[in-house]
Length: 418
Ligand code: EPZ
Image (cartoon, rainbow, N blue to C red; front, side, top):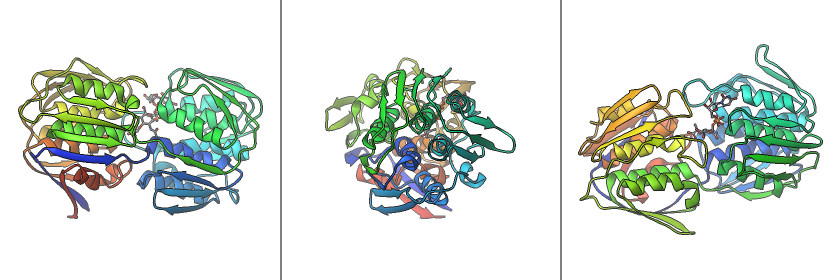
């Protein structure tokens, strides 16, 4: 088993280009199934979740080839329409293949997806969207869907990211015009729209609450550059806030980070946002300050994925901060691990009260999920002494070589076999 040794207590200093976004590239990979020729994705991160998506594509008959950060998918030989239970369990995003398969083949056989354990993660909205587009869905020993999608009205009761993506993909392969109301507004949805349009689709409105898709256009191959990962950036900024120092991040749009930057600014960090970079400066001599309530919300609100890393930074601060997690039932599993490092945090349902302590200390901790793992690494850099972080399989799903990223910012982190 690999573990990461992280020595904290020294300020961070350096520059890092943030890799491509996991939550963008995964739907893009599923969307490759709709293309009529090879598609090359630039800035494609090397993550285990990306590998899991590639395994599904190969199983369905696609060719895949990686050269550094360029990944080419050739869907021309794809013929399958079922994904195995093992492949579905590997990650939550496997469910996006539902819309893509219906668009390509008019048939899809899947099981319920896996992914981080954040509490119940139903797929009822995904299935309702598929039904609204005229496909038949049966949930007997798995999920079995049939029918050529046709244009329709998809009304989402929650702006679900995954259900919006599934509806977009399904509608692109159908006939007629589809409107998706109460769509998720995340930047990754906009990236998906840009990708589909680059292949010849006509999708409009992403970034707003209503998306319109004109179905029935044959998509061609092409190339596309994946957007930078705003949550990886938020994690690195949280690490710098915890440890002190000055870091500059490139390859990410600061506007996607606004609510996170605002919280870190209120906590006493100096934030500089430019078109080309975002920089955070924290004077290590001055403690972070508690901030007004941090409440997670769909985009453009404070991202649930950044809740754990920002909490890790504020664990060592002056005063009390309240976090309210509105998106998932069980997204405080990192709290027990932060407490091993000396944090003073109480949770009650979806609320967490952080009583800032002067400093955390190194400890043996385990990543409970992807972002909880990123949070523990951030906390470790600000803590006194050495932290031994296990559970790296969660971290590798969404952070490409986390230890290398931390080292390029002057952190002391190394991965070893235990
Ligand atoms: C996406 O998950 C992200 N994953 C998550 O990132 C992120 O936390 C989440 O959006 C919210 O921003 C990917 O993009 C691959 P949702 P998704 O559907 O699509 C409920 C990370 O760490 N819901 O927007 O699964 C659901 O239970 C991951 O990178 C239903 O009730 O999220 C949740 O409470 C973790 N029925 C809320 O909606 C449904 O059919 C939002 O979930 C679907 C969702």
